[in-house]
Image (cartoon, rainbow, N blue to C red; front, side):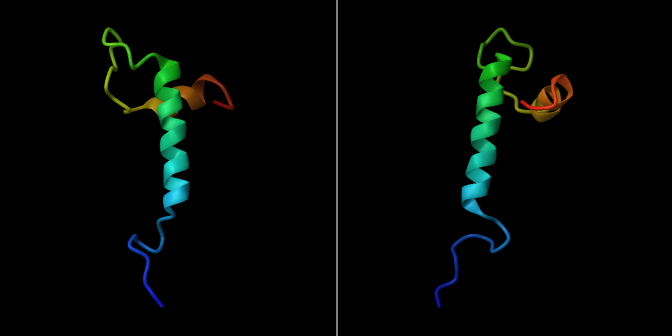
Length: 56
């Protein structure tokens, strides 16, 4: 049996879904604009959206 090339506790499909969600929140928050104070940063992005509403 061939071992997966990733850590067995890490599901790449799940990780990609998380990244896709964060990318969507990044765009919705306007962080893609160079004049945004948090431009080019994902720091605090999830907290920003989960505190703003129960479902991002």
